[in-house]
Amino acid sequence: MTNPLEFLEIILSLRSHFSFSVTSWLRTPTRNTAVGGHPNSKHLTGLAVDVVLDPGQDKEAFKAEVVARMLTAVDEGDHIHIQVKKTPHDLYGNKV
Image (cartoon, rainbow, N blue to C red; front, side, top):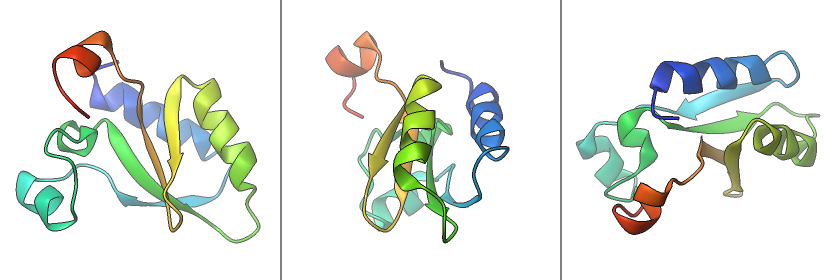
């Protein structure tokens, strides 16, 4: 998946099952650097979001639902980072 709108549709579809806030989505290179993001972060192309679940939401169930939708979920402690799965290009051409 390389289309940020398709990615956004998947994120929005998660809202029908879970209550959460998006705390970071599309970043400028300046903002990405300021928050310590990777130089090739998927946030730069709109293919990653950071979310915070509302109290009472099941974090493990949420992460499982993200993975079921063919995305990657990384628990960063204070938020969950969601991004498109790495492609062969990412693995061999760009670090993400």
